Image (cartoon, rainbow, N blue to C red; front, side, top):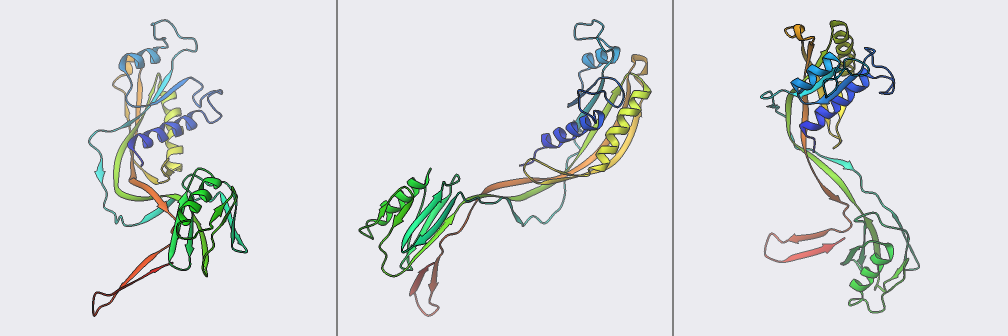
Length: 286
């Protein structure tokens, strides 16, 4: 499921792309080093970066380091009304085996994906279904399951013979991943540029703001999408005496909380029909 940390991680990564459009091995858009991270800066570390000092307080090779922080603003999360009744396929089921039936003998090529299974519907109403770590294991499991009902059933590593009475239906299934949004929320995110001078502040903030506004719909690791809305920009110059020039870029991000669960392909159905006039029931397997 998508988490607030996924949002801040994406915006931090996107800010890095904006500031280092040619990669971090090349110069930034402000022609100086820049530190980009999630969370709020440590005051002592920020002060040393602005003054061009290393962690020990010595002059740093390369001079000052600008900072860009991506911070989820406390107390700004709200629920968004939405009708949440859709289930989505996040990862389709994938088959690794190919199944054919020739002269009543089941032939299987390939190897199963994790959780893949084969189902047999024998004589219209008897179902056998098995999974396994390999094709040979699946066929062996099916043979063991069918043998008490159909004596003479036999399996090899790639084939299965079941002496049915009049019909044999073979189906294969696998496991996919389904998802359903159980909540939508909006969170305010503040991307702050901390720079040693006004020129650097403007160059970094402009680059980050343009790319963020350009990519307002983002795909999160769980495949759900978030939408980014620009809110406001503000400069803070009260720390100029300390050589710190700050600009806040504030955005609202709408994203979903996604519940995920396995989805199994249906290979047989048990239908029970009850009589309205009495308690008699009829059952059909397909």
